[in-house]
Length: 510
Image (tube, rainbow, N blue to C red; front, top):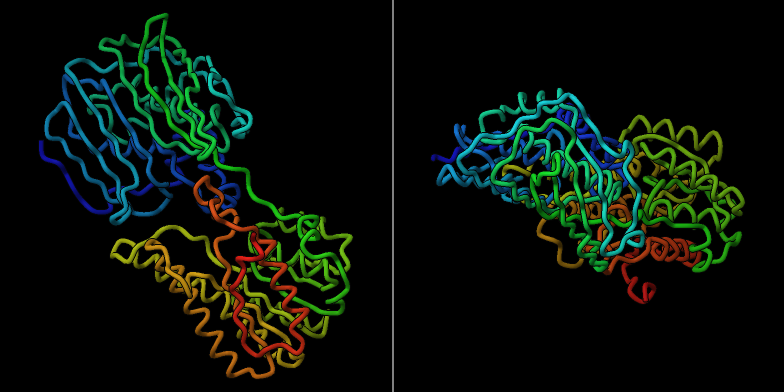
């Protein structure tokens, strides 16, 4: 059988995710909530892994007289809405097909399907059932090897059939029951074990040689057979049956994503006790509601500074930050808006002049989320867009506020990265280029504005939402360490050096 190969065959929409969620009962917020996903290492809503597999299966040739008897789905990297993906299908014989989904040259998902002569099974009932309507919230400490889950399940049949029709799956040798089992796997991982914090990694399934049509929800028994707390990896053995007869058996591999990292006032005070050292000073911190920006804002306000907290979408986090800082020596004020927009910066400048009459510190911290990219045709537009947006988040506020800072001999603190002076990951050409550009414009600005001091900060890997994965957390240091070092430098460096680079944080992290 010829294998069709083409570029940009796949593109997922929000409607695709919504239909899959409603059909499968999988309502995990990583796939459905922009606000939730933005606070994870993925930064954007992730496509259901099983949905990606179904999209791949829809590109198979028709298989009359064949039925699926074994399938392995491997989810190697997250797929996102509205991005173009390429796909290859290898069908050497009618009995086996291998489907691969790529983002450029990066392999994202792989499906290996085996078929044998027979008739795919159908569903002869309108019933549907799922044990949970909200995803369980479990951490690695809540689980132990030997934990079992036994329940019944059936997707919403009308929506299952709509999904099959939309993807043209009816003639691919995969029946309604087989697809229902795939939807169950998504539901089980995303809603039950491990639930909200789930990341689906692999699903292997062997179907019985003869499966009758289904007339009622099928039952499943899932047993946790391995718990690797080094990587938060779970291996779960699953057995499915209907009317007392076995349907399929297999194994699920998944990860539990760690709880989001947070900085607290107490953790900062253990590193730097509160004082009035910056009383009377006014600071604007961009991207200050989460991560390093929030840690800098907390540290400044604990030193008596009035801190203007800029954020774009994270209002709840910004309000929590404000509440937590209510008793600090300084004051924390929320200022929502896009720091890369000239109109917002100009209106904010006017507001600062009217309310405070000056600006002492501009901390350029905001940065777009980092997703892996390569220097290749499929990704280069995204690389360039990232560099442009990242640079604008620093250059636009700097262009507006430098005059105000120069009137008061103020300081600009620019958050760069250690990738400028050390080796960069091969999948970060956009991030590395952006940080080099940011440092370049900072150096030029330091020549033009001699009354302003400039501090270039090159942090190492930080424990933030972006790095909050079992592997990403390794060797990551707390943002509080960087924040305290920056604020201490602002206090100690009087009069300030005109241009200074701050990058030695190793001793502070030990």
